[in-house]
Length: 209
Image (cartoon, rainbow, N blue to C red):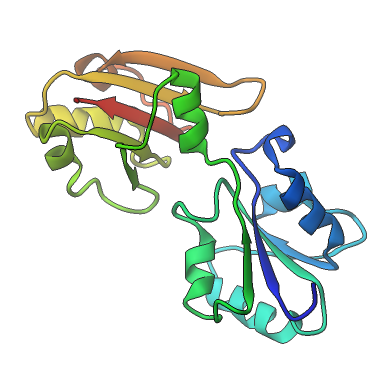
């Protein structure tokens, strides 16, 4: 809709997990913004596309210049409410201007694969962030879901926690969630610490409850 900025959570990756509301908002848009992978997966050829990269201020300026006269939709991975570009946009635009359509997060899908409830889990993203405070959460007897990147891999995180004196608790690692090559493994903290260093982004669930 013109005069609104619609932000769509596209889910964990595979188009099957895009919600009908999200698909309708994308189809209705004349201008679509998002990361290159998201645009390739969800945008349509006839739509004007803007690649969102590390220059977030540039994306904000483009949105400011275009949302009043175009039906503009921003694509974010997972859900709009978990470590999302949506929170950054909320600092620049009023609530009346924004329309958030939630999606299935990779954390949500990981817990579904594990057949575990996650209402008590703490969620931490290590995308460009150090694992500060993670050891304290584990030692405190918590269940923690960690979003990794190619620097803080599951092996690196496990090694860090072992060095910090965390107990050898149960760990599950999910990679490529929702895709045909999805993989979920279960292990212990010490076993994972000695495993190979796979840089594939993952969801790591550490359970010390």
